[in-house]
Image 1 (cartoon, rainbow, N blue to C red):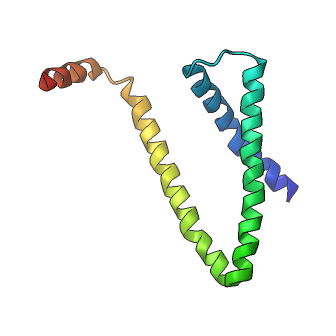
Image 2 (cartoon, rainbow, N blue to C red; image 1 turned 30 degrees about the vertical axis):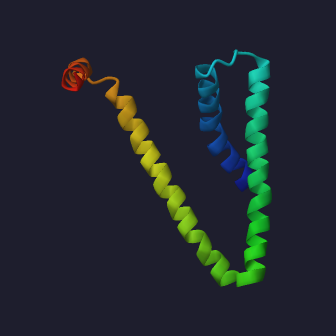
Length: 116
C-alpha cells in the first residue's frame, strides 16, 4: 500500500508543484525558499486533508448505506473528476498551441476591427 501511495504522490506531485510555483510567480510572489516552503506546506496540507476526509467519509457512508451503495456512490464522483480533467487537459493544449499559430495576429486584428 505504501508503494501505491508513493507512486501516486510522485505522479500527482511532480506536475502540480511547478504549476503552483508558476502561478505564485505570476501573482507577484518573490522567488526564494520561503515560497518553496509555502507551496510545499500547501500541497502537504491538501494531501493530508484528502487522506483524512476520504476514509472518514467512506466509513460514514459504509455505516449508513452499506458497502454496495457506498461504492456505487463513488462512481459518479470519479467519472466527473475524470471528465473535468480531460476537459482541462484539452483546453490547456488548445490554449498552448494557439500561441504558436502564425495567423494569431491577423485573428486578433480581425476581432479588434469587428468590436469597433
